[in-house]
Amino acid sequence: MTQNLRADIAVIGGSGLYRLFDPESSTSAGIETPYGSSAVTVGELAGRRVAFLARHGTDHSVAPHLINYRANIWALASLGVRVILSSAAVGGVSPDYPPGTLVLPDQFLDRTGGRADTFFDRGSVQHLAAADPFDPELRSIAARALAEAGETVVETGTVVVIQGPRFSTRAESSWFRAAGAAIVNMTLYPEVPLASELNIATVNLSFVTDRDAGLAPRPGDSSATGDEDAVSAELVFARLADAQPRILAALETIVRAIPRDFAPRESIAPSAVAAVLALPTRGSDA
Image 1: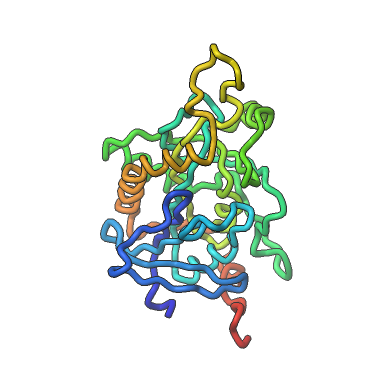
Image 2 (image 1 turned 60 degrees about the horizontal axis):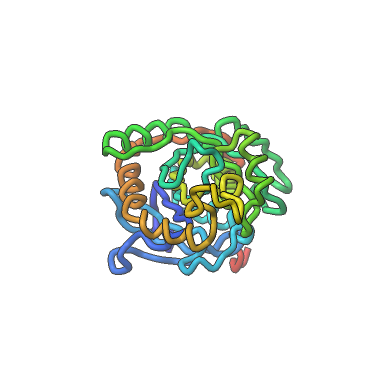
């Protein structure tokens, strides 16, 4: 089955992006992994064979801290994926990243807890170098392609990844900004380092939906402006829906620009990666 689902590139859809292909022109399957199953659809985008995975499920039923990140990344690696392009909804922790901004983050701050965040937690210990977690070459390719297409994008930014599903307090949001964060998200960790552990390059396209909590006006402050940008689930999903054509066009532009011979960085010894991909899957007889 997986042989029919081979793809070099994967798109992981964040909040608001639950389907990428016409069901009649794509193939969907549940991929069994050592960590559980993962639902993947393979179709064509920008003339390329692409695997698609909805991070929160097709009905947004999986909370950020309950996503089976290891199953998702292992499943994509088993299909031959070498590049992951993901979308994400983010809040603007810094006033320099207002709602409506597209960002290609280059760094993250991990503020999650209790998430299984490595494939090398027993038997083989591998230490991942993570100075530049998002692939620099892919980010440059994406930035150049978007600029040539007339899209405005901020080419750098530190994303702080919080546990979720709750949003930040004012104090937390201000703390994140003071620590150098530009945007806030709930899902890019451990997704990004897990991909790196299997030598898959990642690039993320973030869409700023709100001003988070630290920049929101306080209730009862009649002199404040910008209440319409204070974070809420309703606001996030409404703005994602409005921006969906723009986000999809940007993703297609990036996929089209990725060279067919693109070679990811070797972050972990190939033999160690092969050993992970050779683990017996749940449901197998091994």
